[in-house]
Length: 240
Image (tube, rainbow, N blue to C red):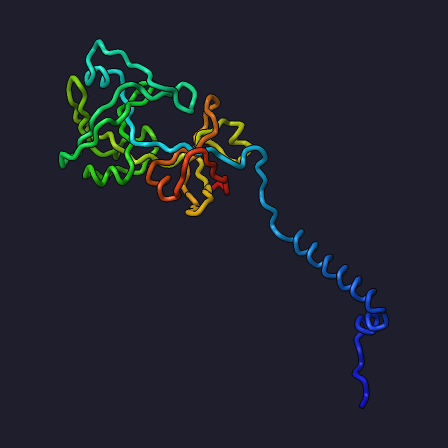
């Protein structure tokens, strides 16, 4: 029986010793893997800024000076309890009760400072369901479709027909941070949370201010869904 004709490359390999053939095959496979690796899309690196610290934001209130004095009295000073992560911002000594249209209430909701040019109550979706309101997911200060609540203070109460929102998840960063990430103020991005309940959050708003420190703000519903605890970072993925 005749021996089948061998192709040129097989004849070449056939003439090699066993050890030389093993070395040649190893070199060819290594070259193939190297070529395949260089053809893949390389991930974008974000040196120094790939990880973004997380701040979990519980329900809270922002008030104008006029509203604060109406609820607490004209002679009441707006007092600091402790500073917050962002420079110049703080938790005040003052709390209010918020009441929904079904007369369900949440007491001891803290006012954050400094005082603002608008009255706003930031709640989670879980809070909103309990209170019986349907607030929009909105950026801070966007109150055109905000839900109504009554604020009850030590001196008086005040009904506000547009004050309650579910704050959009967002990242505070400087303009230099934004350049490193390839984003700008008003953009949206995706981030990833690791761990046993790893989650990707989308539509995360970019907010820039050169006095801020890098931090993502999530409300308690988002944090609980991803099992976020203290001192955790999220990974920036991409601009949307």
